[in-house]
Length: 221
Image (tube, rainbow, N blue to C red; front, side, top):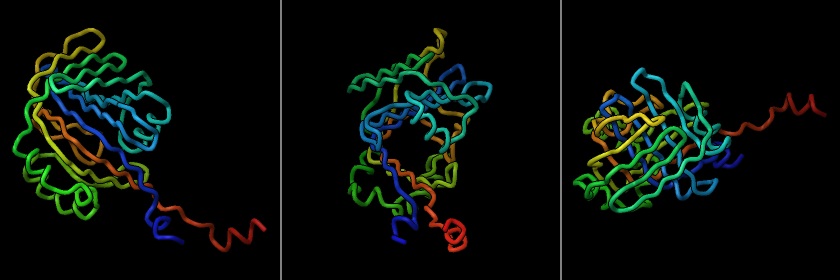
């Protein structure tokens, strides 16, 4: 059995994560992935004021994978589009219309940019960063166990504050920008409490593939 088989296949998603809260209590996490195993796509995770967790995903394949990795009460299939620019990120996803205003790169962003990418994407670096991330940003994890026996780790490469949002859900305004508080509960960790836009590479390791046992092989012959 090869080392790759023993550790399980790794899927890498290269893009951005935006995490914002609103005065209504709705908290939103937008994933924008220009590079992934399935090409470019975007998805939205929403936690509503009553605690219901909803995934907005563009295709059944994306929905199945994300819902098997994280935890949701509702999964909605709908087109999800993200149009990024230096002055505004515009998101359209089913009932959601969102415009967020990115700020300048903050101190954390400048620090993250000093780490070579080849180092940042390694599991060992994620492990080294996990405890400091918990101390500095409540609820944030850089590695953990995901659903379906999967493991996941994040490599943060840049970080910007979000300074404003304009958001509606089914036409109703969600109110002005607020902290992501309480933390979202989709997986093993939350996004930063402060509304932010993070350049990130997410790696998901699937469970190892187990070859058939000798007993099962004998039964099939």
